Image (cartoon, rainbow, N blue to C red):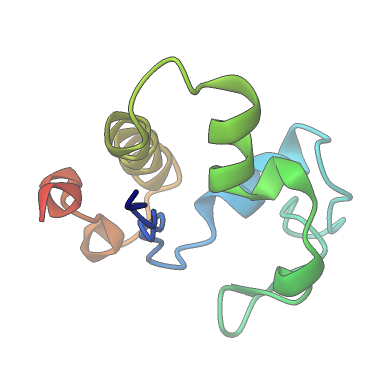
Length: 105
């Protein structure tokens, strides 16, 4: 019997858009000045609690717990397109956008 190890990971450009949304929607505690999650480092756009971040901040956990009726590839592609919408809405540099077709590799 052989097993296939699923090593696919969500590709994140560290734009911080989802952290801003999480703070503004009250899903995470918000910085009173920026509205972003208080755990977003404004200098690096990286999560200060990445290793211990909650489930709502983990794309793989959300897939496993709620959206596993579609393939992981399709879920990651759709999530990436949502990232694109957030990047556009927040008027961030478009270079943060990751091509969803990268998941086909």
